[in-house]
Image 1 (tube, rainbow, N blue to C red):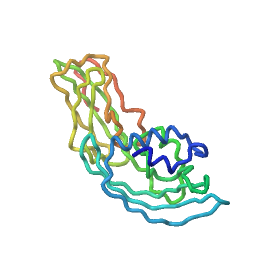
Image 2: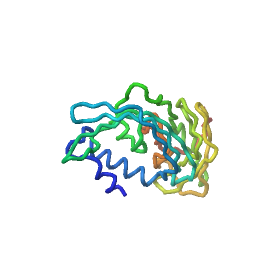
Image 3: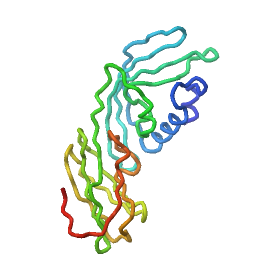
Image 4: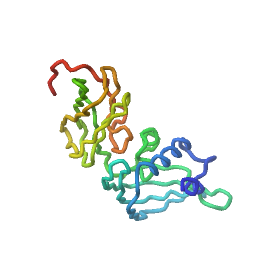
Length: 218
């Protein structure tokens, strides 16, 4: 449970935003099912009574929204301090072993030498057009890495959504359609609304729907 996990984390001495970390772990537990984790301790570096633990890792996990199996590897540094005779986690750096589903937490985690390159996809909506009870959404992966999982697109104003199951290569484009919807011009459309796909920029996934006027895809 999340409470069991945080019994090993020091709230008072945590050097990053403790609540962002809590929210990130909570979101991880809701959007991912961990299938397997392999870890290799690289080194332990003392700093007074504190200890820096450097770990290489690889994990397989599943998105609860799409049931797609994903994998990730990384190199992370965990900082522990002695609290009442027990070592507790007080900071993290490097690749996100935990909390990768929340952009605010990812921004809190500094890089370290030797970590895996942060080559990520970046999904955007280039157009969202309403026509005859349908909503056509033009999507693009402008990042440097392929999306191999399914991609959810949602009209947050109506709650209607569609899942594009083909993935999207780096630089690739696609058109998805939500049919038989009450969508209107001015609706907010979001790609990957649950942030299940880790991207280089999580802030550019929204677009405002417009009435179809013969636009072309570019």
